Length: 209
Image (tube, rainbow, N blue to C red):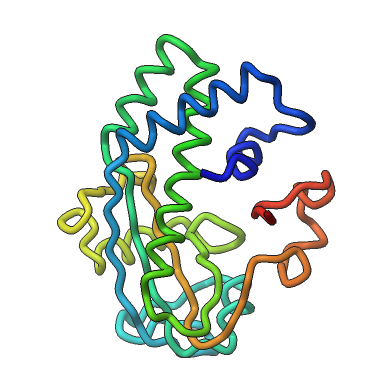
């Protein structure tokens, strides 16, 4: 598991002390042991002006995605989860050890991202954009509801939505990937590079090894 990503989630700057490093290693082992990764996905056609998923007649009200998907005529909607045991362990640590709960949360986020990345590599996607999730940038969190419904994530991977549109289990994710145009994560290509707080602080939302 990439510790740079974990440290990004922790907003950690500078050298990592031995105690924190040991805590990260412990949480990595626990997350890998307790996680049960499940994933489902479906490909749809896109139309433009406005950006819309054709089969669902669903307009995507996002300047960010309109920019990133401008040369894409299809998109993949992908949903995944680490399962309920991760949530249970998180709540346990929140009651007995908040420092470990924070690290466990960061490790879980990283592991979910990495599992989804590895799954994507097994698919024949051709040229594609990076994964973009509702709630990120100006892509409305409310899109989780119609996209989750059409993917049947409750039946296929055991994930439901709260009234506020958040996933249960918490360590679950839904993302959209444009197909037909290559877009990698970089500060240079980011539509929000001028206003990004991370970039101003010398950090990134992605990892370069």
